Amino acid sequence: MAILLSACMPQIVTPHPPTQNPALWVDESAVVSGICFEAAFDAAGQIFIVRDAEEHIHFYDLADNSRLCRHPVTRLPFDFNGERVLAGLWSKGIGCSAHHNLTQFERDDSARRVVIQLEFITEGDCNYELIRPFWLGIPNAAEYEIEFVVS
Image (tube, rainbow, N blue to C red; front, side, top):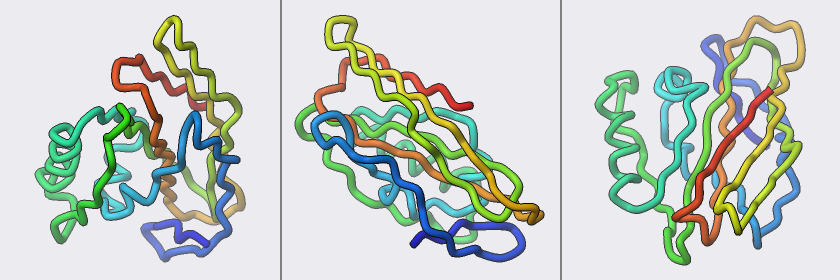
């Protein structure tokens, strides 16, 4: 179960994780779970591609320096070995619950490019502000262009 943060009250829903393919990608949304609702909401729609530990520290510094969180963000580690890349975004909407559906993951090794297509779906008539993370660890992609398409 996951807690979707809302400005009114947290809603507990069953997440809709896409089927993982560890050879291509692993769900790493837990790595960003220490970012507060306000900072994630402010960053919604931005795509983050984090390629090394220094960029990872900078990513957390951005959240802390935004002064949107009441407390320093919880910094969780990510293993960049094997040229792993942390890539993701937050989507926001209004409703009772929200989730992403991964509709396509395309890796072109000759073009050194990864394209990730998602649907962001909100459900219900609630007036809750919702934020939903979608973050992946992608192996052997340090030199790849990574693109997200969200509909």
